[in-house]
Length: 263
Image 1 (cartoon, rainbow, N blue to C red):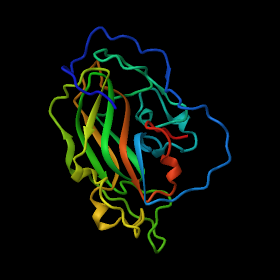
Image 2 (cartoon, one colour; image 1 turned 30 degrees about the horizontal axis):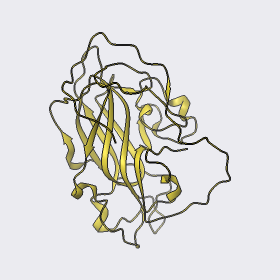
Image 3 (spheres, one colour; image 1 turned 120 degrees about the vertical axis):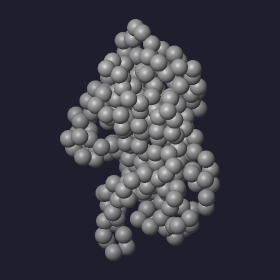
Image 4 (cartoon, rainbow, N blue to C red; image 1 turned 180 degrees about the vertical axis):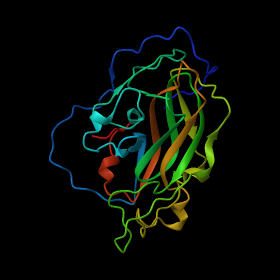
């Protein structure tokens, strides 16, 4: 669904200004409807889905539906990598053109960005759209749950504790990112790491993932980019995922188009 090959990760000069606000194409006009009853399911497939949460320096963990999310999102912040209603992207890709955009994440104060899932996801692919100075070196998978999940309790009513660390080995681990500016890096998981072809037992839950699925149930990803120069930081416009959610509380959340957005 996305192209990702390139010849150089070097910064081009001069740097064009960011394009005018570009609004994601909407597959259909939004119509007010009565709330649809939740539809629990063993799994729900998705393609092109944004991440659900992010660490914030001031607010701890921020989810896409955290009250006041829009006021927390700042230019070039990591919160630009999770979905907000009526997302504005940085514009159509013109491979080879490098530019900055305030609606992207800029690796200014950190080389690390972590995206969180609020339900256990199995992943087929991760798509990383880079605008300037491409530099994605490492992509790591986080176990489920990676953080405390609101409402996730065991059969005794106790909160399920998060599992620290990452799941080795990384699904991407290189010393040089050869992607060109304004292209999408596609990180595809092997069938063994994806697990999306495995049967999902009826007896299981998000708080008690069956042993056959536990190794491929992910709570997020962590990305490390290359060391940044004084000028020309790495800019990432979006990160999306293909895969399926396990024991989802509401399959309606994942239904819709090939490129699915919340809201």
